[in-house]
Amino acid sequence: MTALRSLTWIALGCLVARGADQPERLILNLTAQPATSIAITWRTSGPHPDARVEIAVATDTAEFAQQARTVPARSEVFAPDRGAPVHHHSALLDGLTPATRYAYRVGHAKEWSEWNQFETAAAATAPFRFVWFGDPQDNIAEHCSRTFREAARAAGDARLWLFSGDLCSEPEDGRWGELFQAAGFVFRQVPVLMTPGNHDLAYLRKDGAIVLDEKGKKKRGREVSAIWRAHLTLPENGPPGEAETSYLVDYQGVRFVLINSNAPLEAKAAWLDRVLTENRQPWSIVAFHHPLYSSGRTRDDKATRAAFEPIFDRHAVDLVLTGHDHAYARSHKLQAGKIVPAAARGTVYVVSSSGPKTYAAQPLYHHLMAKTGEGLMLFHPITVDGRTLRFEARTAAGNLHDAFTLTK
Ligand SMILES: [Fe+2]
Ligand SMILES: [Fe+2]
Image (cartoon, rainbow, N blue to C red; front, side, top):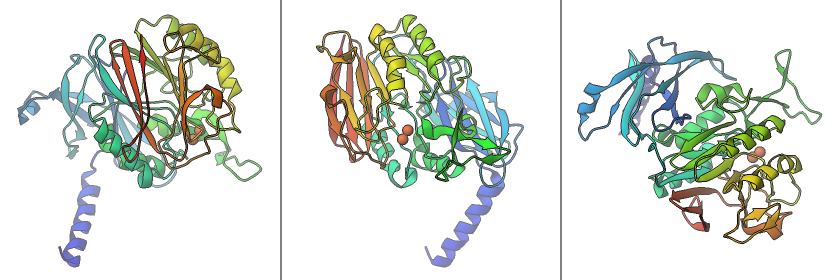
C-alpha cells in the first residue's frame, strides 16, 4: 500500500469510527448466579438511549442471530479525567441455561460490536480452569499485553479471569484504555472478577481539587475510583458499602470470595467469616490485594493478617491469592502461621505480579515459603477437578516457574 493510500485509509477509518460510534471497552463480569446470568459493560462516545444487547444460544451456523433476543442496557454519562464525557452501558443477561455457549453483541441503531461468545457455568460441581493475575499496574499496553496474551494462549479454556488488585497505577482513562488494549479481546469472551488494590482507589479531593501529600504525590481516599464502577458490573452481595469491590461467586464447586483489603477491614472480616461458615462448595479461594505474608523484607501487612488469618485458619480456606508486593512468594500449607503437613487442614498463601514493576523477593517470612521469584511477569492457570486443585505459575514467555497440587 502506498503512503498516500495509507493516509487515505487512516483518514477514512477515523471518519467511520467517529461517525458510527462503535461500542468499545466491552467486558463480561460474572454475577452471583454464573450458571444462569452474566453482566456486560461497554461504552460509546455519544449517548444512545437505544443501547442494547442481542443474545442467542450459539450454533454452528450464522443462523443463531435470527433467534436472538434483545436486552436493553442501562446507561450513564461518565466524565473521564480528560476529554469529553462518554457513555457507559451495562446489561444483566439472565434467564440463561447452565453450561451453554451463547453468542452476543452490543450496540445501538447505528453500530454493533462483532458477535462474541461466552459459556455459562454448570449448575453443579464440575471441573474447570481459571487464570489468576497479580498486579498489572504499570506499562500495561507495552508489557502486560504479553502476559495476557500468553495466558490466553496457554489457558485458552479458562472459564474466568481473576485479578487481585492494582489493575492500573492511576484511576485514569488512559490507563484503563491500556488495559483494554492489552486484554480487551479476552474480556469480551471470558468473564472477569477483580477486587481493588490501593492504586484502584479514587484520589482524595477537596473543593474539587486533588489533595497532594507533603511530597507532592496525589493522595487517595477510601472509595474505589469512579472509573472502576463505570467500567465494571460486578456482584453487590458483599458487606454494606462494598458494592463491586467485596463479593462472592460460587462457581462449579468453588466459593470465590473477593475482598477489598483497603482499610477498614473489621466489617469485611465479619462478612468473610459468615460467608465461609455458610459455604457449601468443596473448595474456597479468597482473593484480595494486601498479602498476609509479604514477598519482601520491608513490608509486613500486620493489619490484614490480624483481621483475616484467624478466619482462614478456622475455615481452612484452600488458597489465598494476593498482590501488592510485585514479586512471587508461595507459602507451604499453613495453619496459625506455621507449616503443616500437606494432608492437614491449612491454607496456601500466594503473592504474585503480572506486570513489569518488580520489588526484591527477600521474604521476611522466608521460612514459610515453598517457592519465590523476582522480576517475573506471571500468570496462574488453576484447574479444579473433583478433589484436586492444580496451581501453576507461568511466565510471560510461557515457562513454568512453580506448580503444586492440593488434594482433599
Ligand atoms: Fe501494586
Ligand atoms: Fe498495591
